[in-house]
Image (cartoon, rainbow, N blue to C red; front, side, top):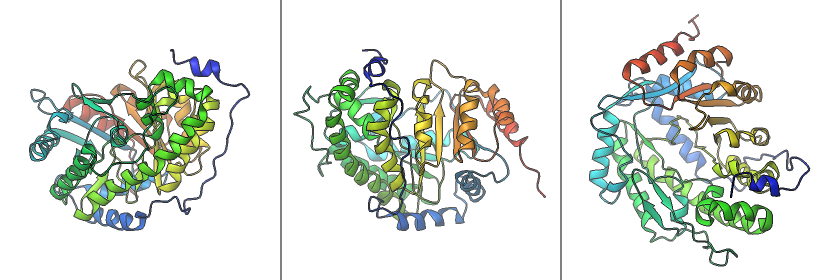
Length: 400
């Protein structure tokens, strides 16, 4: 089934659920927030062994979260200094924790970083880990993994959406988080796995064609599943922070943004396959309750087909920022300048994945420095990386 099927089947009549209220003091909020924020606040008080400038870097990130600019836009970029030793996800080593950590630390150490790029080891299981945590079969391939779809047509064999305490991936996740945190404290940062959004978990476990049809023929099943998954996301997200912060290590998510408050990266890659009506009624409320539950949030908007939902996303009052990936087939960021300007005008910060480094000067010229961050989503040479950094530094605000 093509991606237009859900659009064609969708009821007409425009967007629904246009405004999503926010109440971050609700009982849905994660109970560990105050304790986590206290731990995170202490991390930038001193340099990290592999990031001596971290106190200043943290200030730049805090300004960015506040939709401001300390002295220049954020730049996150790295270059591999040893192409002869390929850096991979090391998924094949997950069952050997010490060997896995040694390989991941070696990967980190062979990167040249610029700007606000933070040295980190990511506890990476591949995309949308939540699917295997609730009982899906995760298969590992060449530097990736996937969860097999198994939910029947009538959803009669759907799981109960909870995490079994003896789930192998769950146990391994907690072990690797704690191991990495102990090694990272005072030295580098622990980067979180991709839990995945609740919608993308359903996409994996139900299959794209079936889930697209469900949005029209069986939306109630989707709503029940999302409601069942949300407490499980709560539990998994809480475990990330509770496993890392007691060791004194700093914690970041895959977009590599620092925050002295907990933050979440909501995602719904499935939104590229559905129209506005289904997205607004079924999936937007689930995204909103995630952003309501955590002090800070940045939505992962992936590709041109997902971009049509930007107005709905900006209606979520508790959303702080938007990250945009132009897409593999359309890697240029420049056609999206207008959308970036609208995001900034709405009072949100923006993080742009840049594939073509020659576009950086245009982005810097056409966008406000306040709340602007660029992430080099390419494999530049060290020289190209330095040139990109020079472009950003040329837009620094002169000291008074």
